[in-house]
Length: 515
Ligand code: ME8
Image (cartoon, rainbow, N blue to C red):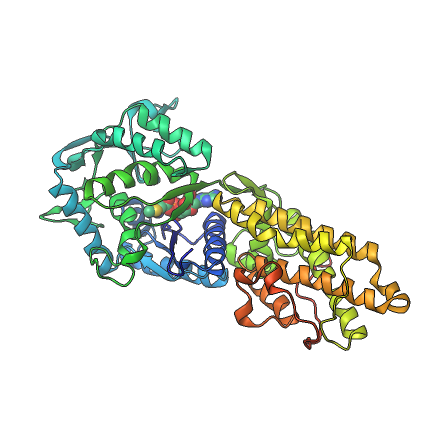
């Protein structure tokens, strides 16, 4: 890899029609972990998130609250931004679709689609779900007993009839299918890919691209009575952030995006409409689109002491930011739906973080403080048990890269904690506390091997538990410039005799509050 390899990764941009919920937090945490992983692996990363502020849903919610859409967007966008800070997200930019830079980019892509001959004026008559901000075909709807209709997502639809610009989506079906075929990783996971392929194979109708019954949106160039359909401008946010249409912008080098991380409900927009718009505009397509699953609160009371904790801010404060991040990414196979509950969070974080990794680090470092003059011990000749454990730790970086390529964050963590378990078994079997008297040199080797494994786990854990991993690396006196992935494996081994700080716990155990 050259030093200049770029990696542009995005979340979806959220509707700020309310406060962020746990699904928004989950997507941000996962995307942040991938972004941090790539930075540590030497890539020039650009990580983008933000808010999607136009459209009818924003307008209707604002009206209900007695606000203008712009006031509602200002208020809630700030809360999304604050959530990124609260969750320790490392995003490089936070885009709002109401910003002037975004109006400019949206107009530019529109004009390119017009120039390509792919946009024409006609009349739309059909169904629209404001909650989904999506058009639906009659055939996709369910008719309820009272005669009202529901979208496949369960949301109500309304009949819309208005003048509208259309995009010749139908003409892109073959090119899209050829693209999916030629780039088997374009859509992930596989279930989502299959759904999209059959959707496109079933035929694509031209897409209504503008609205005339309200004006909360980006005006269509040359047709100010029309505002762009909210998804047209929303998808363009990814280009806006790279400085589009300025080819010389500092961030122009980041296009095409490496991956859009989004929820499974909006894969169609990202894997059908978005690539078709880009093809029309003559722009490169994102390399991958990954649709993660949905998170559900299992429905029971989250905590006896704090009531029903579902707000991401409260969850992070209550369980700890690193704990919450670890829980979501370890517990839920990325790409599948998952559940969370108070018990699951406490069990998982106490077992894996406080017990398995935290105790191992604490026990080995305390022994070093007491018996090795607080300095990194010197290993003697390695026995097979030492060499095997070190080999398992050294192999992790390659396994982690493989898992990351599939966005299998849970697999990466499972592989890492398998090595933690192995290190715990090793520590228990070698009994360094007994060796202290019988064979102090051997004790030093065992302690050295143990903390060398902890070093590698801590480096690899930085994307998921950034604060605790940094604290652990501080305890091992690993310099700031020796914490990236090029220091994993045998090349980065701890140097004997380096003085270590006073050990302290980095993963506090969650203790139930008294009734
Ligand atoms: O869809 N679990 O915005 P949004 C996991 N503005 N993820 C969830 C979730 C849940 N329970 N609920 C929602 C939009 N999400 C558009 C996107 S992108 C150009 C425009 C995910 O606020 C959802 O799948 O409804 C999406 O990826 C993100 O949260 C924002 O959802």
